[in-house]
Amino acid sequence: MNSSRPYLVRALYEWIVDNDCTPHLLVNAEFPGVRVPPGFASDGQIVLNVSPSAVRNLHMDNESISFEGRFGGVAHSLFVPAGAMLAIYARENGQGMVFELEPPVDEDEGEEGPDDDGPSGDEPPRPSGRPSLKVVK
Image 1 (tube, rainbow, N blue to C red):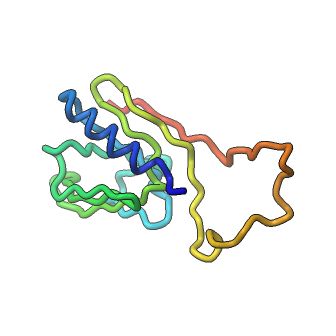
Image 2 (image 1 turned 180 degrees about the vertical axis):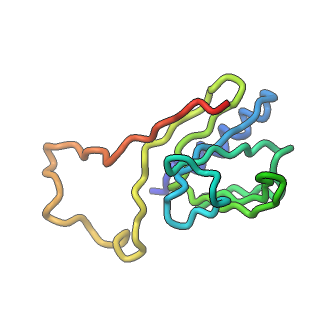
Image 3 (image 1 turned 90 degrees about the horizontal axis):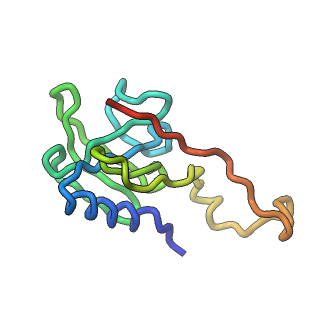
């Protein structure tokens, strides 16, 4: 089954914009394939203003979000794989959604079946880590 994350991000983006708020995306800047301007991430994360007035050529699909944005007056092309999206929320009131940290999957690894070394059916899988949010002013 496909990840629900990109579907939820698109729906929440539309909801935030429809309510005249500013959508912000919290991104794991260290996730493989992420392309964000160097020097703007803090603690491996970056908050991106993805409002229609702040970006150009916004494209959201089931694999990623890409757009052009300005940082320090310089235009950059950004690329965010779906697994790197940690949260989407409205800047004005903080309403939105936080997603669980998603470990990167290798192309070969994703097609293999489960191995016998994993937890038994009696134990629920344990999360590898928790995303964190910071107030940015």
